[in-house]
Every structure is written in structure tokens, then in C-alpha cells.
Image (tube, rainbow, N blue to C red):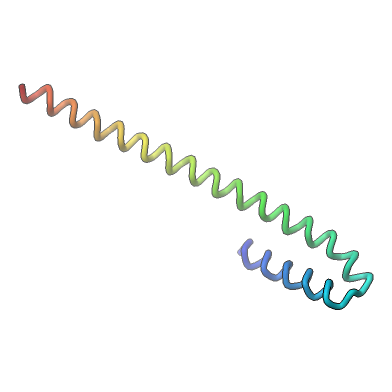
Length: 76
């Protein structure tokens, strides 16, 4: 949804640049701000997902290591 919104915003920005209409060019400042807000939001989402995935992998690795250590000590 946000990516589609950004695509439409960038499209409008491009049209305003091509038309060189003063109102459109003035509107571009707000459109660019909205694109930047959307990008920051997406960055935060991806950062959260990346952190969660890293935590999951670390926990899974610790669990697997613990299983190997337990089986190693059970089999002398």
C-alpha cells in the first residue's frame, strides 16, 4: 500500500516537473515530504523485521547449540 502510494506520488511529482506549472511545483514540496515520511516509515518496518529475524536466528542457534551440548554430554 505504501509503496503504491509512493509510486503515485512520484508520478505526480514528475508530471508537475514536466508541466512546470507554479502551483504544481509548489505542491511538489508537500508531495516530496510525504514520500520522505513514507520512506522513513518503511525503513522503520524493515529495521524492526530485520531485528526480529536476527533475534529469531540467534535464539534458534542457541537452542540448537544447547541440544548438541546436551547430547554430547549424554554420550560420553
